Image 1: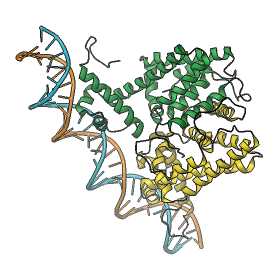
Image 2: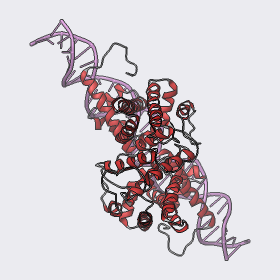
Image 3: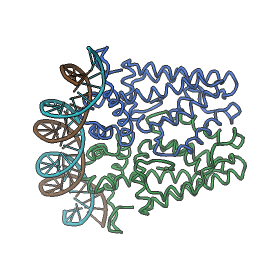
Image 4: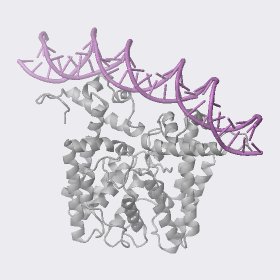
Length: 228
Length: 228
DNA sequence: CCTAAGTGGAGTGATTTCCTCCGCTTATCT
DNA sequence: AGATAAGCGGAGGAAATCACTCCACTTAGG
């Protein structure tokens, strides 16, 4: 996704490095101060001049896209390696949820969501990554239920929601250990031998996918499933 | 907490109404658009003139304080009525956690936190409310464990953290039902008959209280227990 | 060592936001 | 009903903030 660069042209090594510094700085600052931090501040934090930033990212939106993409890619990696490296579905699920804590983009995700949404509809390859995350979660859920380790009245959407909750939690907030405990509590609640029935119907994979197709309601907010 | 008003003077009825409209609008807008919405917009949304807003809240901070206070008060009510009206501690706990979803100040809380913090230290009556929330949670936890309904390796801090997670989740995000399911999953995970031991030590009431006393680290963020 | 690619940051113009001020409206008391 | 103090709105000027460009200088890479 090298914005609008005549294909075949590679970024010079130092330019590439700067680009990455900028994205990293942007991620931190967007998270800490909101999506409207002065771009000059991003540049300063990245240790480059504004000129450099503007050359690489023609406008704020381009930067947002880059940050979104990075986050989503990490999430996808998490899901897929969990599925690949763990022996059974239940453990994959555990690993995925535990790891989701590490991403913690916090409020950033929430703010990013609308932007992401546009992009998703626009068919960027964000869309593909998203589908892959969903697919992975779906597989984990189905298999774990077949194994009898995951309680039956759960849908992939529920898992996604738990994961989202973790991801949305600002890293500045509860410490690593504290969050780790929360995740284990969640996992306890997901085990097949857990308490009584949940209210309502399991959130299905379609619920998840449908969400992608839905128009973004500016502030009529209701019944939507997000992800970063 | 009527800011700096010569005691004994009451607000005229309409003024009072306007004041409340402003706080309500501010809460919504802070949540949706961040803590730096133009105050003029708050005024518009509240259906009053800017003049009115500035007369009642001399600066943005005063408004922030009012919003914080309102949120914390609701939380306190939640905790205390749950404890008062439910027959046993476990049900009180369930009710408290379920209700915490309704507050959902979302990212607002996170942004508000630093401000709140200063105020807490400053000894406003925010401090008292906070203590009362903590006290209620503490009682629920102890009793429920004595009853054998709440698993033993949990501390009040853990409960508070779960609650916080709910409160911090933006209302614009997952629908009511979806969140309700999440809470039930959490509760399942909290029951005495749930899965294996949690990692680390239970978060104690002191952990909670200590947090209040801690200096607010601007971005060194680590190991802290928040609340809205 | 040559050159095309990359860099930084001062400066400009436009936008946004704050906040005051005052003529008008309305609640409240008698 | 009438008096009056409290409250109201929003136009407008001052000030701050931002986005973005431009070009003289530096550096990577062959």
